[in-house]
Image 1 (cartoon, rainbow, N blue to C red):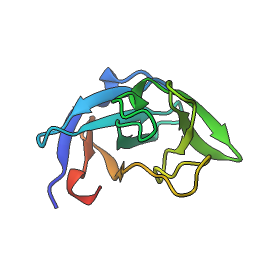
Image 2: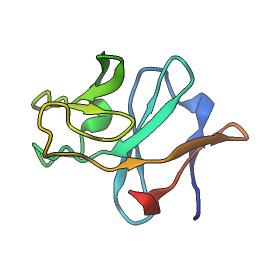
Image 3: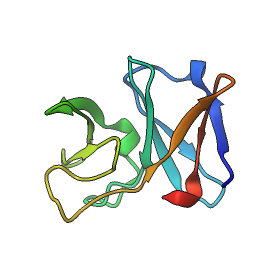
Image 4: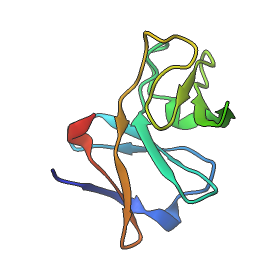
Length: 110
């Protein structure tokens, strides 16, 4: 497995999504939380077809960290990519790690 270095952790703003272009042309949406955790989902909103999840609103539903699409407001779990409003829908979730001050993800697993 090859971890992909995305950016310095210090470049991310807590509670704000950021889009990152992956080598294969896909986009990942990075979500750093105020507690230091970072999640990464595919940036493509499956309901609108737009690359916008990184601009979604972060929140919490029943103790689960979430992002709501800025387009139609469907809510996705950050840890799994599962849509909490439609159980048949999910976006890819990438494993993320912090290493030597950098955010890295595994794009092959999503």
